[in-house]
Length: 67
Image 1 (tube, rainbow, N blue to C red):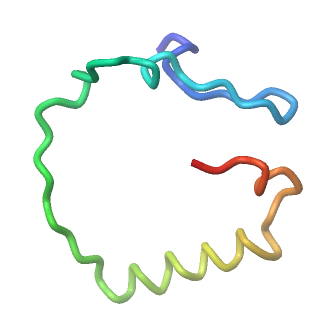
Image 2 (cartoon, rainbow, N blue to C red):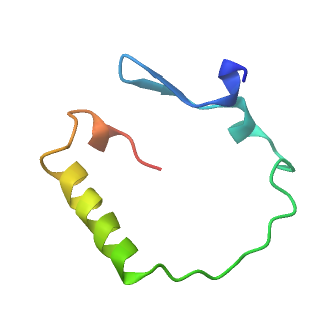
Image 3 (cartoon, one colour):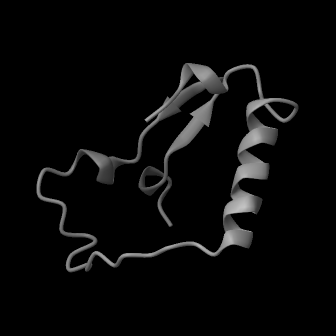
């Protein structure tokens, strides 16, 4: 896979993949929206990871970047 197809990070600076700049995104068409409700176990695991990465597992630069 060509490197420009993936987001990258070098010394704390993020470079977005070239596909993110496409005006008429056809790469993922046609995708249908499907309602999904995660299982309770999945919610518990997700919340455990979220708590960990927001506290003990946090990296110094993570709050500088958000989308």
